[in-house]
Length: 414
Image 1 (cartoon, rainbow, N blue to C red):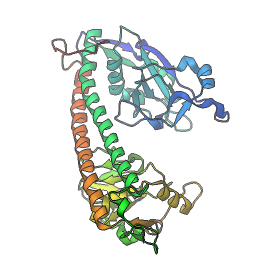
Image 2: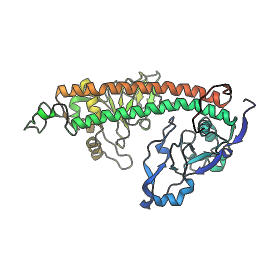
Image 3: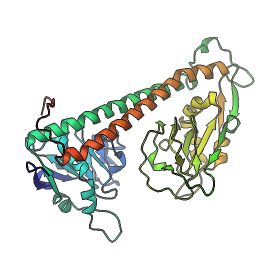
Image 4: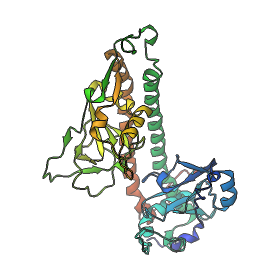
């Protein structure tokens, strides 16, 4: 370690705040304008948390206002997923009791540097867990504050924070672009096939026998798609990348993404090909499904997924059809089991779907396929940016790379 760095404790970086969860029995604590960020809202590897399930009400704000954290603060999960999740706030917000937040002393510790310092210190946070009788990981606030960290001068902190932030800002911008593109594809589907304002709809007559536009057919999903076609052969000993249900969210996934599962269970055998849609059979809802686009040859999916393989011309049409509320409701109505409601392959096969005329399906595919391709390119770019950032991170945070002579443009408010 460079002699220009000094050893301090996390508690010296600023005020450390532990969040709160207002009593759930009193519903008047929720539904207001104040974001309430929990570990389940955070994504491993993402700096920002831009979506959250719950908010504080004005009543809860008045009770817990001292735990209201400003932009630039860094929250680290210290109960449950210890050593895995953290985020940097980009707005005023609250967190729950599983999160300890560092609000840096202004002018002494650069907020971006503190975020990356906490990121590289996650193994230390995990090791600060003394263990509990329940076996649940828990690092107390006092243990968290006492963790030793090394820091350079404020000017060096600013430069390190700026260098690493440049990578994360590009990643965040790409994520925003991906979200907008996926929303555009979703809106196109809904405009054409839900509101029925597809190109030429004004001149398309309705078939009195089916109630559908002329040339459309009512079929079951099983008539136009196959389920769980491919799987690993028994006794397979090659390398795999295991993709668990919890690691998949709505959107496009591809072979360039990283999935942090070191070891797959023996029953993980599902395979998917380009253009397939995967859907969780357990607690089927809007969250655990995705379009598989250019998968890695080693990708293996949890058997908790149903892999839906439509005819090529229908791949994107089927994917966006299965994102509709009517499909989610169909599955939920067929789910059985109290603790873990689940559906079977047959439930997917039986789902009724209105298939548009051939020309209209082709037009939709022409409209949306470039979006899926571009989202895949952006995700590949993000993977490369993340790898470059993660190579620099430990070298910058240990002084191995000296930033003193670097000409780094700092933020205007630095």
